[in-house]
Image (cartoon, rainbow, N blue to C red; front, side):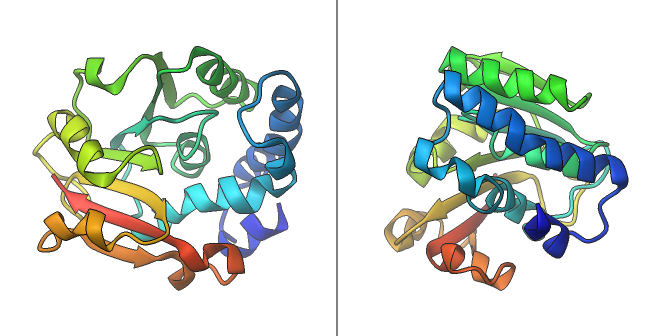
Length: 206
């Protein structure tokens, strides 16, 4: 939890309490339903929570912004972002029901009021949002084809509406078709821990 306070020192007391509650909740649920690698649960704040919050370093969403989290799994990046942006609305989608249930239970336990959930494939989600967020769910081209129908045109943020996703490793070939539009962020611009050396964020207006 100290690492969250270090990089986000302006959190409210309620936000601190919500972030602090994540570890015992995910630890308990992970013992029943494996949503995070068992050997990785001790790294929850670094590998999952802070990683998800990198999206907030790319764009500080204005109140009223709507976002859909594609392939949220146990709630990443959606739940950390929903804590961080209580005046934005988040819709978390995953095709695996038990993972959606964990995300729902965690959100309910910490009192999140700005999240909704859908156990479904993204192909079946028809609503439009300002931004699509995701964490390494599929190759960039596949993701773009899947979600471009879900991005509304009217923008209200510092960046035009579109996709912000978190990825690792070599991305040049994935990003190449969008090289004139996409912006690539090395997460070491935001966080100094070695874990982030191979991690990137991709912003693509849609």
